[in-house]
Image: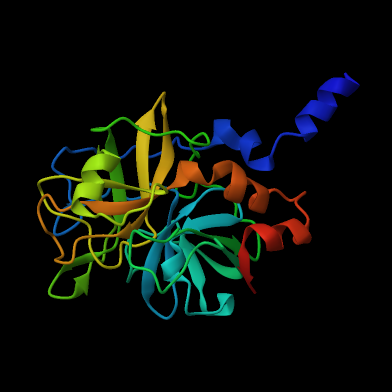
Length: 282
């Protein structure tokens, strides 16, 4: 019995929650022609890990991965201190609050040390972890997504869903949460279109139009074996919003699970080690 207890204590905290993630109580309505740019409104509460990163206005999307941590794109948080941000959870409409909505203040932000604002999109490791000041309670509309296995890569053509409040035309952002289906593109094909893209990113696209400004940091999820897993973070898109067939670039989450995400969110990790694995903004 003692040996069993020791083994359980050695498992990272996030791994213990695998049976409590990626299974929304309110099921999403999936449509092959979904697209965020002028596209489909999500069923309220059907993407319960969706976060809104707010700093006086909607800045970026994010993804709840535990009861105290949200993943987003590093470029979303480069220029502001943690005290500037609030993370909205359980949101659907950006201008109408719901009783079930939580507005969580930020304690600190862990930016990947290889994230460089001077590099072009696709050429830097665009990932950051937001730590909330307090743990949030899980509800029907606030639940974490599952994480993929370290190094896991989806086959070319795999279907993924993006959700966000990006631009819907004329410089206006969506007021209601929207969703878009994209297909994974091979790294070779992506490099043909975007030669500088690094292996820690991957591409996705479809013929109906793209996600747009304001969707950065948002989740890119895949459904398999009865659960939704976070495979990407929206990093950058085509220069013309809504471009058909132009690929979007996503941070490949599976490249960071064991080396960056798990050590940071594990409460047993020392501050000394945290300072080695990320640039901490407090």
